[in-house]
Length: 297
Image 1 (cartoon, rainbow, N blue to C red):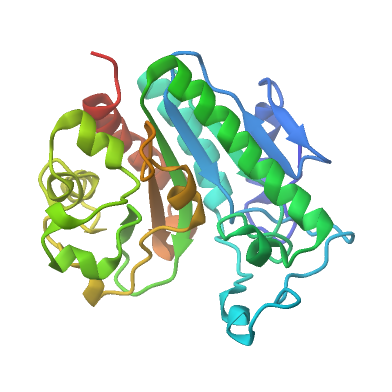
Image 2: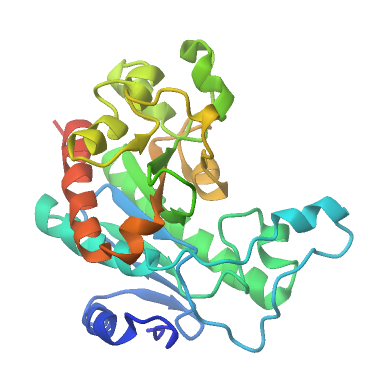
C-alpha cells in the first residue's frame, strides 16, 4: 500500500482509510505505485483515479517533452495533480458499496502526475521513460482486466474516471468524449461517444442521456450542484470544459463494446472544502443513475 504525500494536510485523517483498504484483497504494481481492487462478482462499476497520487520515486524523472516529439507537444505535458481526488474516490468506492450492496472495482495511480500521466497517450504520459512507461502500462492493464471481468459477467458496465478542475463556475463537468462544439449541432449525427452502448441498449438519444431529464447532469442539478452539460447548460462550448481524456476515450464504448465511461471533473470548492460530504453526495447521485441504467432487469 502506498503512503500519502506528507504535504497533503489530510494525510493523518486519511491514513485510517488507507489502512482500512489493506484489509481488502487487491493487486499491486511495484511498491504500490498502481493498485487494483477487484469488485464483487455482481458489480458492473469501475472507478479510476489517475491524477490524485503523490509518490515521486527518484528512479522516475520528471516528465517533459519526449525526444523526437514536436515542440508543441510540451504544451500537453501537464504536471499538476488533481488534489484530493484519490481520497474522494476511495470514499466514493465505500459509499457506493453501501448503497448498491455491491463492491465496485477500483484502479488507483499513486504516482504524482509529474512522474506519469495515465490520462494521456503513452508517449506523452510517460515522456517515453521506461519506468514511467511500465507504471502507465500497469494502470491500463488493470483497467482492461476489470473491464473484461465486468463485460464477461454482465455484458454492460460503467467506468467512472474521477478528476478535478480549476475552472470558474464551480460546475461538475461530465465528459462523454463528445467534442464541445457538437452539443450545438444535431446530436443524432454525433458518433463515438464514450456512452455509445448505453444509447444502443436503451434506445434513448445521446441528447436524452447528456442534456435531457434522464442525464447525469440533471441528477446533479436536482441535488443542488450545477453540472455541465445538463438541461440548464446544454452547450458546454461556451465554457471552459473538459470533454474527456485518454481513459474514457480508450475504455468507453465508443468503439462498440459494452462498457461505457464518463469523466467526472470536480471543482476545487467541492474537493478542498467538502471532500468527504462531496463523495457521499456523488454516491447518492450515481446510485440513482446506476440503478436506472446498469442494474440487471
